[in-house]
Amino acid sequence: MRTLGTECQFSLEQYSESLLYKLLADREAPTIWISPEQNEIQAMKKLSDLECSVIAVNRCVSYPGIHSVSVDHTAVGRFAAGELVRAGHRRVCSVYLESEQAFYRKVEAGFTARITEENLPLELGEALVPQTDWHREAATVFRKRLSVGERVFFVHTTALVPLLLEEFAASGLKPGRDVFLLVYGDSFDFENNGVSALRQPGMQLGIIAGKIALRQENKPEYLLTDLELMKRGSLYPTEITHQPRYATTSQEGILS
Image (tube, rainbow, N blue to C red; front, side):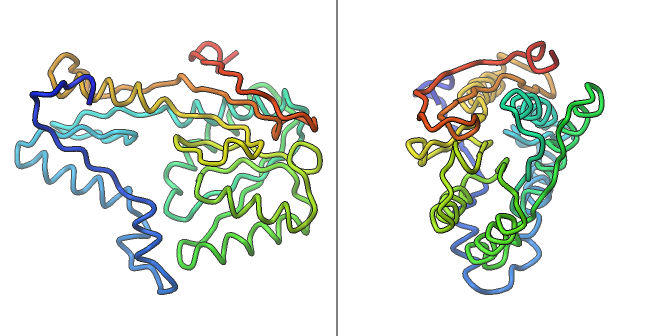
């Protein structure tokens, strides 16, 4: 919005995760909600076919007339693997919602690639949370994972974090001492709960999208690798809650 200025008419469209949860309630999810990314992409293509200017934010859409501005999710996986190993962990369980499988697979690809290339002593497990009745399903998934000894979690859906923290508390497990948590996303309402996070560069995504709308940028695809790492004590084995420490990582830093 800052890039576009006050005299430019524009529209921002974003798939609403919170709206999806309200619509689902306890009913079975219709197919359109199972794979929201694919439905978004089809809508973008139809708009482009009608000669509308379309900018896909955090979506890589290769199609005539569509510009893509996205975080490099494969680089996210590479970065996360390095941070987990530096923190001394040897196994991590990735947790994601069913509707976010496309995002997760890209992160997973980067994660496993770095483990293989550098022979990192890190094992990756995963837990999918079904979309239907996701609150109850998430609690069940977390409870089961804790019961089999999982203690390190990499969460890809910020809405799941409060539920995971509740399960930690119910089990008498303290983040940063008994269990460890790293979250990837762009909106955190639980930062004071000792949650370490990889924050995606939302401001940068918006600025580039605005420049494309103003025709100041014209590449078909922009992949951003800069991430903000917030260490608040839950990723590293300490009982001390860290103050925010911001670290912007370039592509070279991710690959090093």
